[in-house]
Image (cartoon, rainbow, N blue to C red):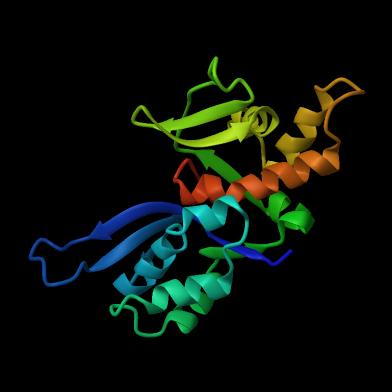
Length: 199
């Protein structure tokens, strides 16, 4: 499977000076204990990494896709170079959902959405909402792992802890759950249901 690319950090938005000019003075992204001050074009590329939600939902949004989408914005002068600089700064991360152990150990996922449970009509799907609007649906196991995420040191620890609660037969294996959750991470981030931080 090709490596997918997702943004890392909490979106702090643009910062305008008391005497604003044509552009923000900088844009803020909180990464660990640092506040990164990005020029507008870099911030636009970082945000563009969340635009193609269908591709994220199918775990197929790659670095090449990000460069292509960023190239469509005339405000971004050097899309490929900016993507590389953001990756080197830890603000973008690439990983293979089928080989995601290092990624899952290295990052923690923080929730931005509310859990809305399942429905009588679709009991197999558990919903995440923002401001009362459903924005993403997950299978129960991925949803349950997500519920425990605030208390875990990283995503991998929570997946392991969840597996320990399951009966020994008739459930997904650790490997299956790892793939399921790793494949859900891009959609969680792109839909702004959660954001990544280094663990």
